Length: 514
Image (tube, rainbow, N blue to C red):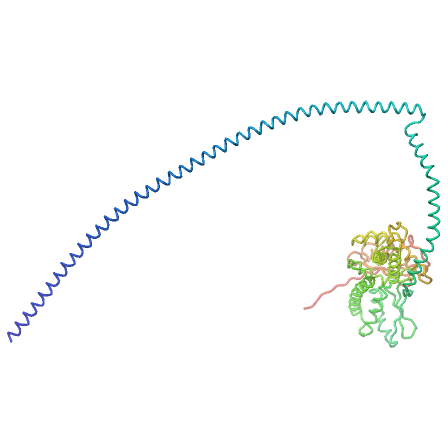
């Protein structure tokens, strides 16, 4: 047992000793490695220092070489610049010398020119004096002044040429006089026979058939409210008499009468006849008429082959459908004139399209006479000038009533066509036109007053209804306004009997419950 313990102790001690020895050896080896690494590091550091010195030396050498090269280039460029500067200075000096020389030469030439000019002036005065002396000598010798001699010479030439000119003129005049009537008659007959327009005289009333007599009561309304609203809104006379199943709509204004007829027809179809419904239907019908007027104007433009025209003029052309002159429908008359003037211009070698355009617009002012004061000639010329119509159109408007002379074939053809259309038997009625003019004057006087919205002449011109703005005209002023209008009508209008002036003032208040 003891031997075992001793063996174990010995073994343990030997193990410990071997471990200690091994550690010592490893430590000695590690120290050697460290020393070797330090030596290598010193060698590398020394090599780096040597390489750095070599690089610095090389860089310094290269820098010196580059500096020398740059210095050499700089010196070369500087020498070139200095050379150029010297050359430029030399050139400028030469130019300045040349300029000074030219300046001195110009001064000398100016002096010589001044001398020559003075000499010429003296010679001119001398020439004029000699000429005057020669003229005086000739006047004394002939006994005539210069003006008298000129007049005598011209008179002699005229006398020598007068007989010859008169002979030629008489021959040409005879030929022209003989042929012109035949030529004119041929042109007019050809134009008239090639165009045959429809014609229908305009009336002052429209008769509207009814289904039964009870409808008359609906149109009149309770205490006449419906018929009063119709007449005030439409500006026409609604006549309900003993004629069975018929009411009569009377107005000199074709447009108002057509709108009124359409409105009453629509009310009869609807069945609801009351003031509010009347106003609603009226606005709808008026809007429809405005659209139809524009379309009718476009159809007329298309029919005549006119390429383009301002929309406002097209609308006025359509509005002529509801305008009459001496009982003749204005649009029918205008179309007739346009076609005839185109045919006449074509036969005379003119522009047929331009002639038709001038013929179409020659009475365009009649579409404005219900709304604006002034003659249709001046109104038409002003509206055409505003929309840049050709000078031929403006001249035709003035010339067809003798305000100007026609400037070309197209204007002359419009004047001839207008005379043809008006002179055709049955085309016009003077009595109707004078009545319409009187009624227009009455309406224009009424609408010219301040605060007046509309004025309608009714009852065959024996009454005028004046609708005023309630905000601008009170009850007392309405009485004064009626008196003023009546007095002005007495002073300016010729009429039989008497004319009743009826001023209507209405104030409406609206509100909505929501």
